[in-house]
Image (cartoon, rainbow, N blue to C red; front, side):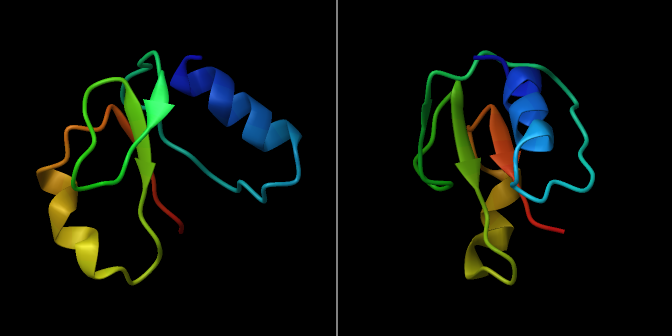
Length: 67
């Protein structure tokens, strides 16, 4: 599934997606933790997470970040 397809599903559902930005549209195969993810994996970051500093180092193809 491409990232844009996932975003469309979130917008159409009850996820509460309010805004988004898609820099690239990678093919996502599976999920992974922010610190151990690889290409074609999606990860997420919780609000006020101490892992925020790992955003610049993650290998995840997509990251969902709450507003």
